[in-house]
Length: 352
Image: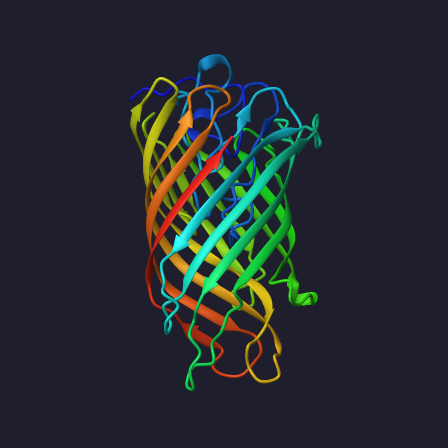
């Protein structure tokens, strides 16, 4: 199949094969950090897929028509400070009995873009600095405390954070995806040094072929049990109706289902490393303060709709299977690790 001519802009968040070998700088691009509660992959959509409208690149030379979903979508237009807002909700089924833990996860973010090394020769695509304040809420149901199991959780935990991201393109072949996130993660009953967390990522990109891009790097999770995860893999876009992110730790395969007058509709299957870390006061003798991790692995099946126009309402719905669920306690009585029952998940999101 013949490939389309290269467009005049590179964006590390936009459809990769549509942006091979940029020929000239184009208007700055912006992208919010697509967040799902407290993702373990800062600046990446480790929970919902991207929910921000995506357009074809300037000049109409993109391999992809308008409405192609990306893991982190972008506006390819004249820079504006306010880039948009998004929110998502997820429910992990559980009745609170024994180790059947239910969780409601809610989050909301807004993204702003500022010029950053705008005319630098190491920033070919004039990528801005993306600043994303966010708020997350988790409502926990269980686990049940017994004489033999002292595992406990607070009724709720909160995330308040600021995420920054910069995605420079150093040469037509080599680029990077960089980010830091600083925030407070606690149930507000306690506020200690462990309530602060600093997360980040450093990922290099290499254009292997006009339809394939390799990625390698690390993400710093700043959890108590797992501090670092490698990032390795590639994105392959064989045609305008398919995209395969063969990437650890966030694999995803997307296919176009149909088009409507205003939206493109895509189906996808993906995987992710979910969870987070917080501080709280334990419900055990002495009420000690402890930091804890909640970790799981999620496999999801869903649909996403993105507008054909430069702006508009986007959204997604999905179901998932959640397994390898664990609680990890830093301090307090009882076992340090508590395994939880596998469960099902529902998730939905909106963005504008």
